[in-house]
Image 1 (cartoon, protein in one colour):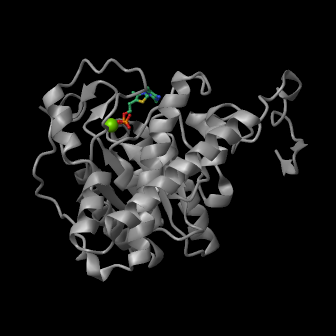
Image 2: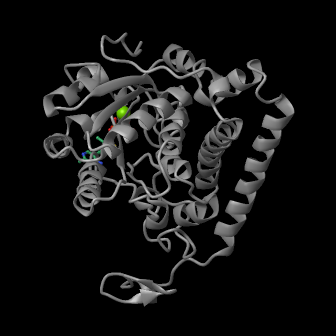
Length: 344
Ligand SMILES: Cc1ncc(C[n+]2csc(CCOP(=O)(O)OP(=O)(O)O)c2C)c(N)n1
Ligand SMILES: [Mg+2]
C-alpha cells in the first residue's frame, strides 16, 4: 500500500484554531466545499454529455489548493496543472464561468476555447492550467522575475505534482529562481502517483522537498490534507519571498481520491489504500475540527454546503444557456483582433 513516509526534513504545524480569524476559517471551509462539489458536479455533467473531453478531478486535494491560495494576496499569481479546477476556485474563480469553459461555451473564462486543461483568468492572477506536465513552473518563475525586475512585492506560486518534479522544466526553473532569489513558491502536490505509476517507481527519493537544497533554497513538508498547515507554509514562504530572500519548495503530502482522469479504471491501486486515504479526507477532517473546537455549529456549516450546491445548480444552468462558439469564430485570437472588448 502506498503511504507517505515519515520525513526527516523540516515540517510545519498550524496554530490552534483560536489563533485564526473565524471568517478566514469559514472561507477555507466554503472554498474547499466548493472545490469538492464542483468536481463532483463536473463529473456528473461530463457523464450527461455537457462537458466534452477529459477532466482530471482533484477530489482529495482540496486543502493544498485552498490553503495555498488563501495565504496569497489578491495580486499574487499562480500557475496550475492539468488538475487545476481547485486552484482556480482557490484563487476566487467563479464556478459559472468555469462550468461554461469546461462545457466549451462562449461565456466561459476563455470563451470556450481553453476547456479544463487551459483555463485561465489573468484578472484573478490565475495564469493558466497547463496540459504539459511541469509547464506552469517556468511560467511562474518568469512572473517572479518580472516582479523582481519591476521592484514589485508580489509573489508567483506554481502548483505541480510529484511527477512534474522529474521533468527538466522544474530543474531549470528552480535553478534560475534559486540563483536570482526570485519571489517564487514551488507548491508540490505529492499525491503519490503520476498517472498509474507509484512514486517509488518514478523517483529515487520520497521526500521531494529535498530537491530544493540543490538549488539553494529551503524545502518544507506539510500534511497536504490539512488546510491550515498548507496555509501556514505558504504564508511563511510568501513573507520570505517578499523580503527578497528567494523561493521556497513546499511539499504537501496528499492523495487523489478518484482516478487520474475521470474514467480511469484504476487497476494500479488497492481498495484498502483508497479507504485509508478516504479516512483522511481533507474536507471531512476540517469540518470535524471546526465542530469539535466549537468554532461553528453544524447548522452553519450545512448552510455553507447548501449554498454551494445552489451556486453549482446556477453554474450548470449558466453553462447550458450559453452558445457553443460557431465555426466563424475559429480564427478569433489566432491573429490580433478583439472580441467582446477583449484584445487578443
Ligand atoms: C510533458 C508531459 N509528459 C507527459 C504527459 C502525460 N501526463 C499527463 S498527467 C501525467 C502525470 C502527472 O503526474 P503528477 O505531476 O504527479 O500530477 P497528478 O496527475 O498526480 O496530479 C502525465 C505523465 C504530459 N501531459 N506532459
Ligand atoms: Mg501525482
